[in-house]
Image: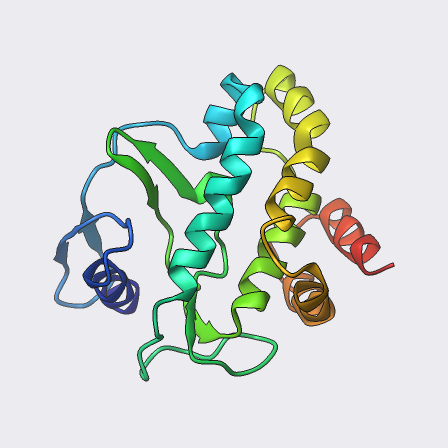
Length: 192
C-alpha cells in the first residue's frame, strides 16, 4: 500500500485525477484515501448505455493523459518491455469513478513504467474478454455494447502499435489467478 500511495501522490502531483491520500499506516499495509461519491464508469454505462461511446473516449483520454507522465525511477517495470511512461495496468471502466468533479482513477496496485501501448493493449484485453460484474439485465446491455465500446476506445489509438503488444499482454494476463477459464479463452481469441 505504501508504494501504491507513493505512485498516487506522484500522479496527483502531475494533475491527474486520483483520490487524495489521507494516511498510510506506519507498516505500509493500510491506506486511507479520499472518498469519491459517484458510480463507476461501468455502472454508469449500465444505467445509461447510450453514453458508451462517450465513456470510451473518456477512457482513452485518461490513458493519454496518464501516459504523458514520466514514471518515477523507483517504479517497477511493466511486463512486455521497458519504457519511461507511467502505466496503470488495470485502467478499465470498473476502476474509474465518476465523481461530482469528473472522473477519478482508482486501484493503482499494478502501476509500472513501460510502453503506453502495453497499457492500452491490456485495457483492450479486459474490455473484450473480462466478465461483466453486474446484474443480469445490465450484463445483457453491456455485453451488447461491448464491441462498440472496444471499437470506440481503440479508434483513439494507433491500433497496429497496440496490437503489437497483445501477445505479451495476453501471456501475462493469462497467468492472473483472478481470470476465469472463459476469460482466458476469450483473451487468446484476440490473438487469432
